[in-house]
Amino acid sequence: MLLKRYSLLNTIIYRCLSSERPTLYESLKVHQTAPDVFTQPAESLFVYPYRTSVFGGQIIGSAMYAAHLTLTKDYPLHSLHSYFLAAADNSSPIIYTIKRLRDGKSFETRSVTARQDNKIIFECAISFHKKEQGNMAHQPIMPKDDVVPPEQLQSTRHRFKNLLNDERLKPELRSFVELGLDMPARIDIRHCHPRDLLRPTPKWPARQLIWIKTIDPLPNDSYLHRSAVAYCSDRVLLTSALLPYALNVFSPRIHMQASLDHTMWFHDDFSFDTTSQIDSSTEDDPPKPIRRHADIPSIPSKLPVRADDWLLYELECPIAMNNRALTFGKIWTRDGRLVVTCTQEGVIRCY
View 1 (cartoon, rainbow, N blue to C red):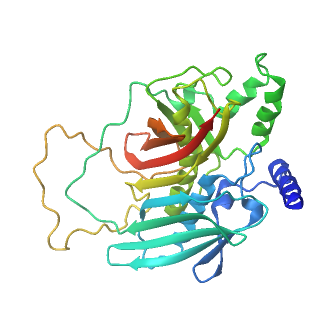
View 2 (cartoon, one colour; view 1 turned 60 degrees about the horizontal axis):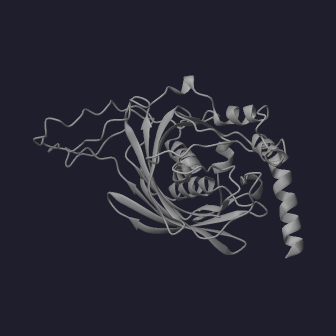
View 3 (cartoon, rainbow, N blue to C red; view 1 turned 120 degrees about the vertical axis):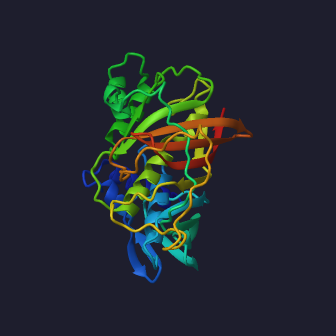
């Protein structure tokens, strides 16, 4: 066991500091090794320098990407329900095994089991739905009052850099910040109303607005962009639970913080093909209008959703109890279209 831990520590340090770092696209890709079995190489697994476990968002995104490779029809993903069962490291590959639960006329459903060293680390169920045209469509209005344009904000990485010149930074935290800056920057994160990183002020209600996007441009692959959004969504969701307290990632009182599950609903098909056909009820009987409430707000025009363009992430944590916190997130396009809703429960032990 000691040899395993020593080898693992060396592996993590080498891969965090290596200049040969995979891009986000390469981090999400999987390779088919058998029918409905896909492998994610160890060298592509991302571990934060100050942790030993693989980033959960990468596992979610790669599981989604693997599942879509088994589809019999080109149906967009509409929902995902997942559980993190054990921590993974980056010393050996992760194997994704897909089970085909349903291949119907309107839906295809897959379950994904991720294993490392024959140990189950992650389970999820994913459902894909054909494009349909309905006669009901409504959504809430995107927040506006508290939203600051991303061009006027500093990235989280830039704020970390500024800490190195902050006289309040304690010596024991300097190495933490330096390691954080050395990790590969795959996501640009900008808080509309950032708290002080060293002396966070408690905030209530536990709600925040964050702009997110991938740093590297991505090809026009709707499945890849959905996987990239899933990757980004896991990065900051649980941090909303810390807002009501004088706590953040630098706080030594946080003994443990880990995601337990992750659920996502995709309200947009992320399609880049504007000529693709949308199924209606029948070819000769299109959906008939339904009398609507006069106050239903209009929905912005549909445009391709890109993970490499700015998306507004609205987050809140309505309850924390028994060392668990429940968080909710809404992801909006810049023009105000709600494209993703997600939830996550996590364990946070604070002493």
